Image 1 (cartoon, rainbow, N blue to C red):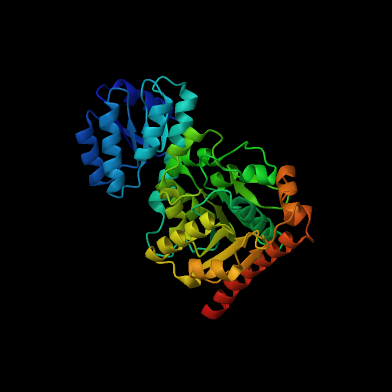
Image 2: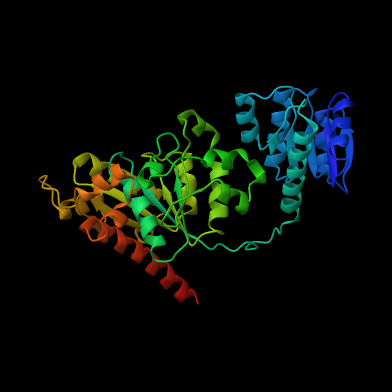
Length: 384
């Protein structure tokens, strides 16, 4: 494996050589500047690029972003004299695999470089043929442009109901600033999506599983960041990679979303096999649902890919279900009734399908899960 150290001085290249002295089949060379380093990368034969402390960080990030945009799969490690939170965020956005201080202990430097080499070896050795990694999972995104309509209740309960049908299920919280999946499932956010994102291109299925929190039902949840400001490092490209891995790991991937159509949501929609739009019996919710459906049609999601769930469908608010259907221009597939069991289950941190499985809301959510399974298995049967 060829390691290219880009630095104005030879000292850090010597540090890298010493760190990898016990790693077989590695060769360390040095480029004195970014222009020379990028030229060697583009010529091929480089497996890992290490950018040393003598290189301007802004220039380094620009160069890394350029080679990534060109499709380069090599490993990239940044070794500045000091690592700050801002630098880490910028490096991850640029496509850097890892960041290690140039003055870090030898054992830490060795660990980072070895992991970057392992990841690069897997990535560079992977087949480029379409379909080399067959998609397994069925992606269901729960959507609404209005907050407070029950998206997270629906997503978490459907996920748990699917697990109850002996399916392997991942539940992803893409409400990156104010996600409540952890609260709904009574889970402590010991790991979140931030860890997966910070792993960069090193992330693989085994590593991703380690950033998920397992619920007693068997659902594996990828929770939202605990700090709202961390949402900015969860980029669309990272989300796409995460979902791409999850569909190879689980039968079903359920995605909870914020009340918006930001890049995170659009990325999830691009991967989705089914979209469940949640609305309620009020004019604001109906209006937002109509707008959401118009946007989905513009994105290519026709009526056969979208289901409507009406929450609190039995509310006496001077609106009829038929009027809601007429206003949004689609039939309502699922009607979720009001029931005190739902807010009680939320406050307990126990999904209603477990806390009160015989209640009417639980039965509707269980039937939703069964319909999702039947649809997927029926489609597979048609293909067969």
